[in-house]
Length: 241
Image (tube, rainbow, N blue to C red; front, side, top):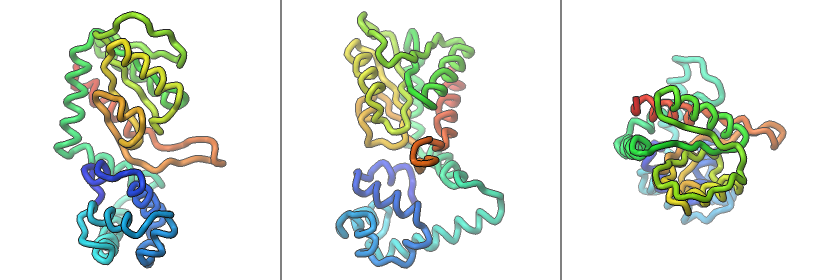
């Protein structure tokens, strides 16, 4: 119901509707369009546009389709033991099989294949994955390095370099600025972010997005699943080899 193509087409306000629906699945089944719009703090016309992008004529049809979607989801859950993230991870793996997403991965592979060297950048958990990515690609014979310092000086022409920028939000100021400095020196940029509407994805030559709910403990410690990031890193690496 919420394919990659659908999620890719949503604007920022429509993405708020999607996020609310996925976090309040049971309640949304019984909410009127006005109740939903008030809960999300958007207009009813925004909700209607969201419904149409999801393949429905209006909100009434959306509720019917959404109930069927939840019924199928519950039937699948009875077949396996799930944790809190499994639905989103499974949805991601369905997403990457689409023709459009496959084309994006293939483009990233080609750009990286043509590069003389790779540079991974990221902070926090994304930084840890950046270190892993640099080692993984180096093991496959593609010279790679991870730059930990977000204030790393970028001076010479680096047109033979591809930067792989990892950021869940795609808005981490230090990473956006560092990616911008690399772009100024003619690097190609591949981004892996949670969503396609962020600054980093818009800067990238090859943006790769996944869509999972952000999860935090005590509103501070981010425990959002990174399975999609690992999958994309390893998939691109294996295709290079």
